[in-house]
Length: 448
Image (cartoon, rainbow, N blue to C red; front, side, top):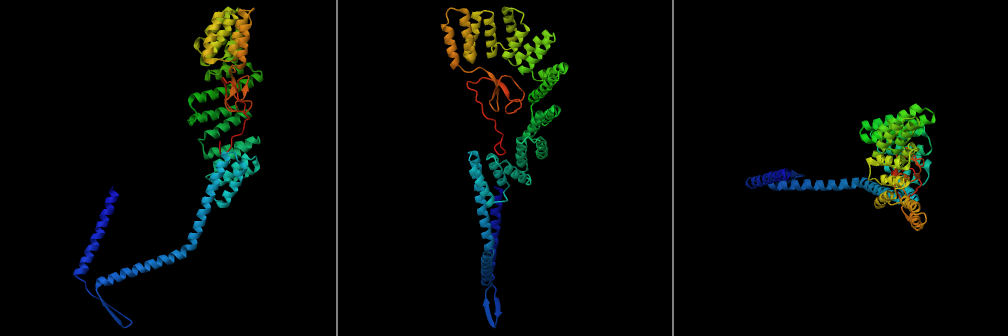
């Protein structure tokens, strides 16, 4: 608003000055005399000023025309440059779309076209590198990645490609070198720190991995629960190494630390309880099972409890199971464990009750099989109902199992690192009607 007011004020002042000048010239016209080549010209001051203004305007027009023709080659060159730049940008955009569509040969062709039109655009190198990488031309892609590191705008992207190439070729030292360079550029990058963490885990440098987790927590890239869980997994890997080396004391120490940091990991709690039981510390083993089950209900707790109570009768074991699941009595795992223990104790009504509750929340093959066992055990001379349940099991959803969230590969036991894709902390206990096993592929530099 103020700007418009000032503009209007300046315009009024200019207009006022022109009016005053016109009035002065009208009241005092004056005379001007010009002698040139023997000719004498008499005129008023107003007319002289008008001629002067026309002359100045004429000179400005001529100068503008001259300037235009003088700069015409420059303007034409700029026009061609802008046109080539627009074509290059269009080729770059089409190339990225081709990569997203999986048309890698077309993307490779468009990358060359983009470079032809605009060789100074750093993103063209990224398109070329990505197209070569996705086409399997890793050496060519690596060359483009090296060129990208020479431009400040694409240095990190280039290093990312070099890191993935080094990982693909198992060149761990070179991978670490590139990761350190990338960390210097972007010290708060979660991706770089995660790659360093997985590299140290792969090479068995567990102390370095623990330090990286602490660094990520310090930089607030991990929440406190996430940091504790990762530290727990590192403690567990140290415990496994101690177990392989036969160091029972170190195993229990590290496994206890892992259980303390992440009591929700069932495998750690069960294995620790098993070692306490073998060393005669049964009460301590049972305590770990009880507290661990409350954090993460799982069938492995009941199996371990069965080993600890192997000498007791089925009814006493059923009462121990009731104590075990008391921390999560309505969980599907709890209902299944109770139904199975009741079946062993020949408490048919109780077992059916828990299975009926389970069918409403987590109907699966194991429910059908257990129902068939109950029918066969309770009515041994009438196998019709048992056969019906076995037929239902064939079409029922599959039971929960350990599944990697990254590659969707199933595994019979839990591991901190996926045996297939080497993903860290990706395996979880899941239900899946048809577990999908996908081939693991390396992440791509452009699409992640």
